[in-house]
Image (cartoon, rainbow over all chains, first blue to last red):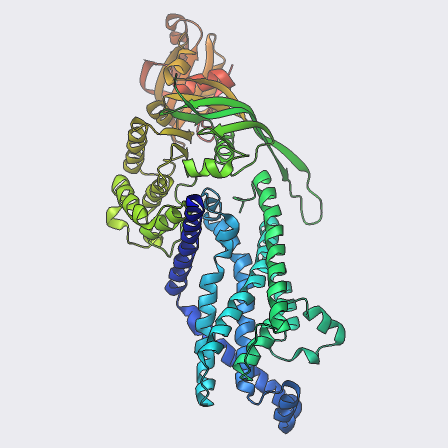
Length: 281
Length: 344
C-alpha cells in the first residue's frame, strides 16, 4: 500500500512537472495567443467568402440544408479552432521531441527514473488547458452575440471531450515523433498526416458530403466523432448522454490510437538505445 | 575490502554508419567499433578517469554505463544494478552530466530547469527546493538562479549542468568532459567540487582528454584508444611505465615538420611530440624521449636543432608525463589536432 502511494505521488509529480514547465514556456512565448485566436476568424472569413463565390445568394440556404446549423460563423469558428488545435498537437508532438533532441534535453529524460509513457502523455494536460482557453476565447463573441449561455454540464462535457480528443492526437504525434527521429526529417510525414486528419474529421463540413468510402475511412478516425459531438453541444445545444454510441466510439478509437502510438514509440525507443539515436541530431 | 560501484565486463559497442556519395550513389555501410571488449572496475569514493583522444570511445562507455545505450556484447553493473536489466534502478542512483552547455529549456530560469528535472527524479517539492538551493550555492549560481537560461554564459550553463547531475544525491556521478570549453576559473571550480564530492564518499567516473586534468583529479585512470583500454592504474603507476626513459623538454621557435623529422631520425630517440603554441612562428614545446643516456643523445639533438635554425628558449630534463606514457603505449600522440607526434 505504501509503495503504491509512493508510486502515485511520484507519477503525479512528473505530471505536475510537465504541466508547469509547458505552461511557463507557452506563456513566455505569448504570440501564439494572438495566432490561435485570430486564425479561426480568418479561416471562417475565408470559407464564408468561398461559399458565397460558389453559391451566391443561395449559399446560406445550402449551408443550412447541408449542416442543419443556422449560424455559419459559429460553425466555422468551432470547426477551424478544433482543426487548428488538432494539427498543432500532431505537429507539436512530432516536432517537439525533435526539438528536444536538438536542444539536448531529450536524452536527459532517459536519465531519470520517470515513466516515459507517462511523461510524454502528460503533455496532454497543458495542451488540453490551452485548447480549452482558446476555444472559450474564440467562441465567446458569437455565443454572446446570439445571447446564448452554456450550462455548466455543457462546459464540462466540452472539457472532457477535448481531453479525450487529445489522446488519439498524441498517439498519432508519437508515431510521427518515432518516424521523424528515425528519419530526422519531420515535415513530410507531419504534413501528410495533418492533411488526412483535416479531410476525414469533418471539422468544417458534415461527413455526409464525403464519398461513401471516405465516410467509412473517417469512422476510424476519433476526431470525426469529436467534431460531431462538439457541434452537438456548442452549436445545436443538445445534451450529451453517456450511452451515446458516438461517445463510446470516440473513447475506444482514441485509446486504440494512443496504444498504437505508444507501441510504435516503445519499439523505436528500444531501437534508439541500440543505435544511439536518442542523442543523434 | 573496498566496494565496487562500477563493473564493466567485456563491453562492446559497434555503430554502423553510412557514407554519402553524391546525389544518387548509395554510400557504403561502415562498421565502427566504438568500444571493444572493455573491462574495468571502479571502487566507492574513487575518482576514476577514462582518458583518451577524441573518438576513443569515452562517451560511448559513459552512455552504456548510464543506460542510454545498450551494449552489443558484455555486461555492466552500476551501484549493484545491471545496466540493461535494472536500468531504472541504475538511473535512480546515478547523476550524469553529458553536455557542458546543452540540455536546458532556454525559456526557463536556472532554478526552474533544476526544479523540472528534480521532479522527474521523484524528489518532493520541499526537498527539491532545499536541494536546489544547496546546489546553486555549491556551484556559485545563486545570484543568477532566477535568470532565464538563454541569458547564461557557457560557464554558467556548465555549472548548472553539473548541479543538475547532483540533484538526486547520486551514489555515482558520471561526468563527460566536465571542464571542456570552460574558462580556467570555472574549470578550477568544477575540479574543486569534484574533489570535494569524492571526499564525501561519492564515486566519480569522468572522461577527459585533458592529461593534466586527469593527473590532478583522478585516483586511477584507464587509458582508452580506438575503443580499447590500453592501461589502467594510478597516475603514478602509469608514469612509472615510462620511468626508465629519459625525457627532455625543449621550448623553441621554428619547430617545423622538417625539424621534427630530423630529430626523429636521431640515434637513441624513441618518441617526439610537439605542441605548437604559435603556428606562424612555429613556437612550441618539443618533448623527446630517449632510450639511451642523456650524455650520449643530447649533444646530437642540440646540434640538429641549432643546424636547423631553431631558436632555443629553454632545454630541461623532464619527469615522465601521462602523455609520454600514452605515446609509449599507443605509438601515437594524444592531441592529434595540435601535436605532431611520432614513433621511431
